Amino acid sequence: MAADPAVRASEASGDVSEKDVLRWPGVWRVYIASRSEEIKADADRCLGARAHEPGLEALHASIGRQLATAARYAKERQGWRRWLTGQAIEGAWSNIYGATILLYGLLPASELNARAPEVLATGRAYLHADDARLTQLAARTTAGDIDERDRSLLQSVLRAAYSAASIESSRVRSFRNLLLGGVGLLTLIVAGLVTIGAVWPYAIPMCGNGTLLASFGPRGDQVCPTGNGSPTHGDVPLVALIGMLGAALATATSLSTRSELSTRYSLAVAQNLLKAPAGVATAIIGLLILNSGFVPGFGGLSSQTSILVWAMAFGYAQQVVTRLVDQRADTLLHAASPNVPTNPAVR
Image (spheres, rainbow, N blue to C red):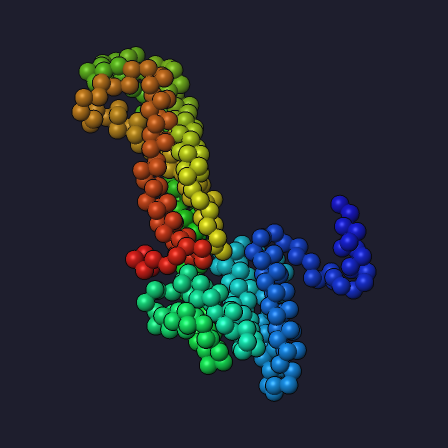
């Protein structure tokens, strides 16, 4: 695909170089690039406004180095190891946070009062409501007399809030990796069950009888998922497929009620991937329980249709198991989202 004419013109004039283009996927890279430009513009403007004050060039240079480091993380390719550890994302955001904190040391005193509500909102998003620094800043902001004396307070609140944000994001990342590990392990287990059932049909019987009393009769009274009168190689795979269908319906239902939060990491994919093997497991286990005669008052599976319907119902019922995972994921995502008010009870 040909490059955009505007991009080619910019490159020809030297405004955009080959190494400045974000080549690897990830919306967070766009955020890093955009935020870096904002901080750089503010830092250059503030240095020009306070050019007569000594010692600010070193602060400005430090901001530039942190922005350069953030840009380097954003432009590098992220392999599986970096994706799992979050090295690129955390490296980029930590430098953006550091540059932002340093920027508040460079801002003219006349701008501190206007910036104080932004710092207060950031602190309230991540810190406990009874944090002493937050309480002090709230009082000073309400009074409307933020000045040079409060510069270190603003930086302290930002530093604490950004540190808490990084901790909460690392918890989300660790839970995501744990979820993916659980998905892989459960998938191997159910794949083993399906393989055993396909190779040895009588090892995991999915067939039912018209009544519990008929279970003591000949095998000819049996009704199997594939419609035969005895176990076949396709019984367990068919039940697994129907269980996955039930899990997919449950996933579609949960998507209609789930709201995405603004966080560095997403758990939606890992949560939905978990439901598929969980649906297979609950479908197979559920039919085994029904055919065992342990359910009081249950007369047995009397037709192929009833077996498949029950398999789908048990596949859908994996929500009972995965709901605990979803609740934990929601708690972590709310804690890591800057758009959700602080709730000390869940931290």
